[in-house]
Each structure stands twice: as C-alpha cells, then as structure tokens.
Amino acid sequence: MYTQAMDTMARESGAKLEKVLSPDEQRLQERFDARIDAGDFIEAKDWMPENYRKTLLRQISQHAHSEIVGMLPEGNWIGRAPTLKRKAILLAKVQDEGGHGLYLYAAAETLGQSRDEMLGALHSGKAKYSSIFNYPTLTWADIGVIGWLVDGAAIMNQVPICRCSYAPYARAMIRICREESFHQRQGYDSLLVMMQNGTPAQKAMVQDAVDRWWWPCLMMFGPPDDQSPNSAQGMRWGIKRVSNDTLRQKFVDATVQQAQVLGVTLPDPDLKWNEARGQHDFGTIDWDEFWRVVGGDGPVNRERLGARVKAWDDGAWVREAALAHARRQQTKKEAA
Ligand code: FAQ
Image 1 (cartoon, rainbow, N blue to C red):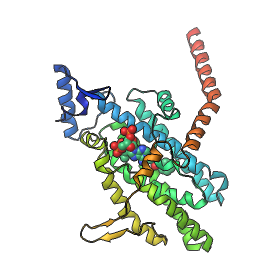
Image 2 (tube, rainbow, N blue to C red):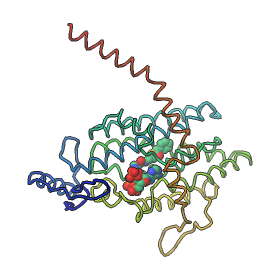
Image 3 (cartoon, rainbow, N blue to C red):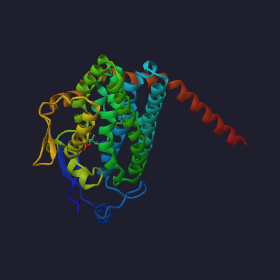
Image 4 (cartoon, rainbow, N blue to C red):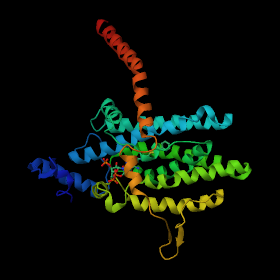
C-alpha cells in the first residue's frame, strides 16, 4: 500500500504537507493501490492520485518533446545523405520520430493537459527533453551512430515502458518500440557498410563518431539510482519497471559485442568483463556534463530550442487557417 507516499502529500513553499483524504478518497486510493499491486492497467477514465497523473504528464510530455527535438540532429542530414537509398531510409526515420511525438502528446492529453500547454512549456525552456539531442551531428557517421547507439539506448529504456501501468502510454510504446528497432538496425547497417567496405578515412569517421556519442548515450538513462529523485515512486507506481542503472548496464553489456563485430573501439579504458558479476565494468560518467546539458548549457541547446520555436512561429498561419476553416464549417452546419 502506498498511502503514505508522494500521492498523499502536497508541496507548498518547499514544505511537505500531509493531505488528509476523505473516506471516499481513501477508498479510491486503496482500490488504486490494489490495482497497481495486482499489475492492472489504469485507463484515462479511471480514478488516479493527483501525483500519479502529474508524474505521468511530466514523463510522457518530456518523452514527446524528446522525439520532436530528436528530429533535428538527423533532419539536418536528409539533404546530404550519400545515396538515394540512405536518404529514403533517413527520411522515413525522421518522419517516424515525428509520429512518435504525436502518439505521445495524444497519450499525455488523456491526462488533462492540452498540447498547446505542453508545447508552451517546451518553448519557454520549462520542460525538459532528452540530453542526447543537445549534441551536434558533425559527419554522416553520426547518423549511423545515432541509429545504433541512441536508438539502441532508447529501445533498452522503452521496452519496459510497454508494461507501464498507465495503459495509453503502454499502448503508444508498443508501436514506438517496433519502429525504433528498425531505426537501430538501419544505423548499424550503415556503419557496417562503412567499416567493411569504406576507405580508411570513412572508418576513422565512424570511430570518431562513436568516441563522441558513447558517453552522452550512457547519460540518456538518467542519473544514478541513488541520485534519481523520481525513481522510487515511479517504480512503485509501475510507471518505471527497471531502474536507470540496471538499464544502463544492460545497454553496455549488449553493445560491447556489437562494437566488436563492427570493428570499433568504445572509448572507455575501464570497460572490461567482470567474471564475478557476469557484467561489464565501465568508467565513471561525467555527471557534471550531464547536469550542464540538462540545465540548458550543452553544445547546441540554444540552437535546438531556437529551431523548435521558429518552427512553431513559422507554422502560425497553418494553425490560424485550420481554425478559420473549422469555424466556417461550424457556421455552415449551424445554418443548415
Ligand atoms: N535528459 O529522477 P530521474 C529517443 C531528468 S527518446 C534530460 O531519474 P525519471 C528516441 C528527469 O527528467 C529519448 N533530462 O527521472 C529517438 C528528472 O527531471 P524532472 C527520451 C533527464 O523521470 C531516438 C531529473 O533528470 N526517452 O531517444 C535525463 O524517473 C533517436 C532526475 O531524473 C524518454 O523520455 C536525460 N537523459 O527518469 C528520437 C523515455 N535523464 O523531470 C530521435 C521515457 C533524467 O524531475 C532520434 N522517460 N533527466 O525535472 C524515462 O524513462 C524517464 O523519464 C528517464 C528519467 C529515465 C529519462
């Protein structure tokens, strides 16, 4: 039972205040807790504690923003893809990311916040999105590495969310994960072609991209478990199924062999198999860099947010035209 948890607390000026539940609320809370304990899925129409709703809104909207901002680093290379085949694949991938953002905004809207409000929070810098998209894509190899490592990390994190206790989010994630698998494969395939058939310069370009993206990818999973303020409650509510550190470790273990097949070195001298643990040990992550990037001071945070705000402003006429059309249709319907 979680009745003493975050969902019964109200925060005011930094102080935690006990919220006294009415007998009816107490019954609803107990029923909700029992459903979570039983592994049941919660639907939008079901009663839920206010903080469960807020936590989901925070995570799902951040996730949606990540997909939409995540279109920018790769979109930057659509016009410079080396072949027609690679261009068609990249175009489809970037469109998929846009679609993922839309499913996720729709899932978040079921929790009572409008898309305009969520986008307002993104554009004002109030809402977060994944740190990984604040790094620049300098060469074509970055596009392959994003598919292999960024989508690979995203899949590792997102497969458990297919079992999230909030059903609309879980349903959206099933389709998203299927598409992410294709994204990961296309990235790996593109790197394999360069590593097997490429010139020495192309191979060096792949290694350079791996060197730059490896550590930021490990940061994608979020802070260490003992410094993750949202983890304990998220796990108890069945929003998060696997912890940040466990997912990061699984990602490292899965990636080492793929790097060997590819013929690249992962840039970590401390990365080695630990027989006793049955897992790889790896070096220390630069958490100062992570928090700097999350706080808005990464290599291209300003460009990324600037591009999103510009796209929103440039699209104003489309929204106005759609609203004018809807109003005209409504007037016609009323007159008929
Ligand atoms: N970047 O207490 P925790 C993709 C924040 S989609 C920025 O551990 P939580 C597809 C966190 O929000 C990638 N901020 O938080 C693609 C919290 O701040 P808050 C996105 C981060 O929620 C591929 C604070 O730090 N995926 O890549 C990050 O329990 C290629 C404390 O952290 C998702 O969003 C970060 N990396 O766990 C698209 C998946 N990590 O909100 C295009 C869903 C943590 O209290 C191209 N989200 N923070 O102010 C999740 O699984 C979780 O929200 C975590 C964070 C694991 C990201």
